[in-house]
Image 1 (cartoon, rainbow over the protein chains, first blue to last red):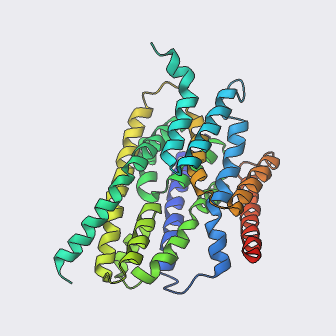
Image 2: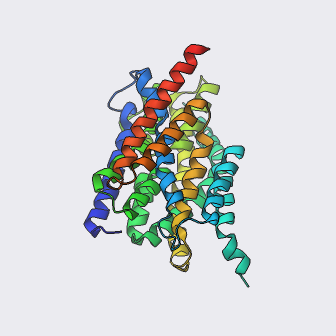
Image 3: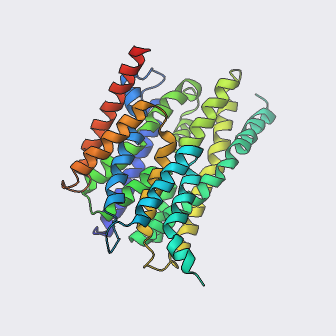
Length: 110
Length: 235
């Protein structure tokens, strides 16, 4: 990470302001007017549109992996996706992914 | 409105909110761990959780900071993850839009996934609720979850400070993102959007950090809306 302390605080501050503005928007400024259907549709797709694009390069080209992507990375990613999809619960996906990913470490524990 | 009913509404919010501890606690802990490993200070990590209270976007911002993306790209991508909350705001407005200004500001600050989902469900099940009870219920849910989010971020920072650096903690991020997004995949339109997002982001991976992702997100959103619209017209 290559930012000055001021820049990091700036990012956090602007994230806070921006997030509040989004959350407050219709409760305050716009009042109880209906949101246009097309906009509402687009908003519903934002997490599904942003997160997969963010995750794909991370899985294929892991940030801190010395030898690049391994079967462990791919299996952990797949386990997380599968478990979270089947159970529809974030927590099971994270547990499955973490157990698979750290299993080589866990096995070597004394 | 008798005080007891406001209390009753508040406590039923607390009761409905607490099962989410199983999600909030590990998730907040994880954020603390990853943030401190990434190089944020304790104060920065805590402020982040206290002011933003939005897991996915906090992780997204952190990831882009690790990639040294331009600040404008970090903000655009991380706030895009939060845009769905404008929809929450719109859904809550008919119920809570007449609350006092200070209450609406507080509701805006605490308007996250769980508080929105539970409250709207409650208001629809019990249409006779008075606005004071509605606000109290919302606060019951939100004030159960938000402090835990901060508390366990702090716990995560403490844990993160003792985890050996040679553990590849950064891969926890994609695992967390995959776990967050998988339950959101509910229709062919979602699958199409996710697919376009992945392909475009990979194809544009050579662009400056964060910029390919923004283009991918816009293409994916458009895809989702188009596929959904087409499928609706067929039925």
